[in-house]
Length: 256
Image (cartoon, rainbow, N blue to C red):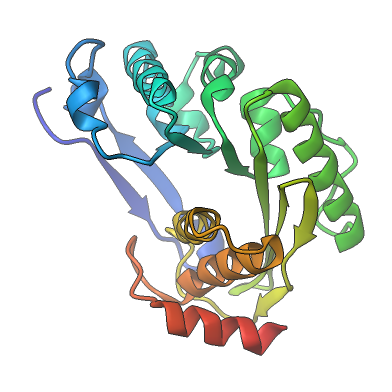
């Protein structure tokens, strides 16, 4: 590629008016091709491989590289996780169902939400769901979405779903669910009247989820930690977090 890909986050007068412009044409990542990587070398001493649905969304060539990587990781019995980030602007005229249905059979852990599971995998979504639906309704839908993913993709053993709702001009309501090891659990409800930024919250949640699963923690502890990590990112500007384990654990205690 000729350059590093980039994106521009345009912040409006409030958090509801954020807009993202992707600039990926002729980027190094966007021009990846099969056969460019020595996966035997890259995956040495690797126990976990994570990827985002943003990557295969770029083009068919990058999607083929993703598949190549997943096949190589699978042969080595490496745990594979995916974040179902749905970015319609990146998919353009391509059908995400066709691409993601080829990649998901290699995944052990799936993280997303009921809307991205519908958009990327074709998992049924209740058309009558609205933001004012009560939490019990959303939890039940997350359970049904999780079960459908588990039944469709035999290798998947863990599904996590997040819920993020705007409250007022600057507030947020946030919680998450987890189906793992035949157990269904959900986090405390996190609420704040004012946040700083939404960028990176899903990444923080995913990092917390991976840590808990990697350490074989109890399912309830895993989802509480992951949700607290994701919620904490709302109070930091920018794409990176400065949270540590102790601050996340302290936040859990505030919302138990």
